[in-house]
Amino acid sequence: MVVRRRPLAVAALAATIALGASACSTGTPIDNLVEGLVGQGVEQITSGIDEEIRGLVGDVLGGVELTTDGSVPSSFPQGIPLVGEVLGGGAGPEGSGWVVRTRLDDAGAFAGAQGALEDAGFTASGVSSDATSGYGAFTSAEYRVDLSVATDAQGEVTATYVVTPQ
Image: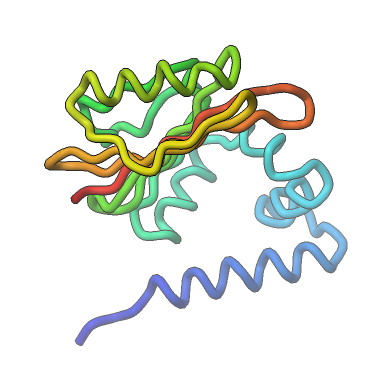
């Protein structure tokens, strides 16, 4: 008999978040986390996630790994060059995919990121860039990398690498 715990766990987490967002805090760790997410925004709270919460997210989502400490997920494939300061990332269960976000000096760094991928043996397709952004798909025999570079309203430039196995 196969037990389907993941849908139940995700439903339970969603219900907890919904109830916590609409009710007063009761002081439990989940209620406090939800209150913090609602009150401070996802971006701010993510930098303060501790290992217990990170483990809870991994358990609920079936092995998802999150990093917010300037490192790539431990299962991130070797041989995929990243340009810029690593901010963090995520890994799907069982090598199903990875996301890494980096901070760049300027949007012109897209060309450097493209060159690094091509130098590592990736073939580019659908590449488009301008003074504030860039996008391209890069493939090798093992992986596909979708790279996007964007400049936000405050002028911060970030690159997002979405890596999936071929």
